[in-house]
Length: 308
Image 1 (tube, helix red, strand yellow):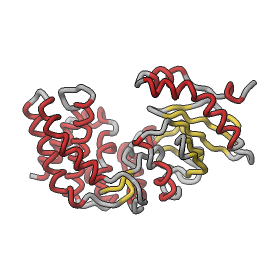
Image 2 (cartoon, rainbow, N blue to C red):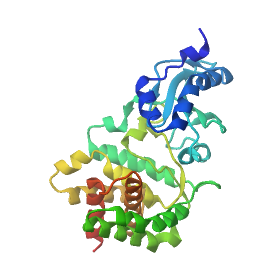
Image 3 (cartoon, helix red, strand yellow):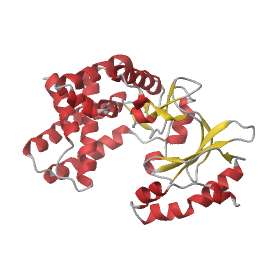
Image 4 (cartoon, rainbow, N blue to C red):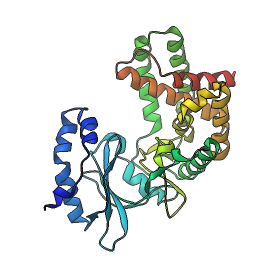
């Protein structure tokens, strides 16, 4: 049996990722050979079924000394270009350890965590949110290494794109909301920060571990203000927020906990969270949408009403 025959590429991953386009389908065709090459190169042996996310395949493996690890295969993309320097800068402090990597293919060998126990499995939302906030505080305490994408550049580009996006939205109230979010970003543009941001820190990107109880995974590193980190945490378990019957109160309760634990200025954090809502709105319009997601509207509205 060839090594590539040992590479399990789940059909569901092929179906979802291959739907994105020709480049993704070409990468999928090469994936078994790519995985086999790194099993040989790093003297690894498969150690269980593969897992996958939106854009990567993760193979549980064992190293030559029998240490468990995880081989992460992903197509090189702008979003993940800073993952390796980010993981190096964090040095495993609150996040998965990087054991080895190949820059050309974006392949990573990572510390093995418990993929079957994400933070979303913790039933008490207050406990889960505090765990996430404490990890966030540790991650943003690290200065961003040179060469990462800058929030300042992203924010300036967002402001340039806002007028066209506003025209694509049908509801006048949503047009006004996007303009208001853009105004908040414009007011903060000169102070965009220099911290190392994860950029996608939510419950399913935190896994149980042996080295620590919980560690973050799958960063998309960015240099910027920690306030730009909060929105994914605010959106977690949105159905539970709605079920409280007082969405505004529930959003602000989460916001208060996050800003307190991470040690953020609330006004700046609110402004950058509005910036994150703006970014999501621009992405939605780019995907052909003409309305905003209700959770984004509710979060932005809660923060704006609180600032008044």
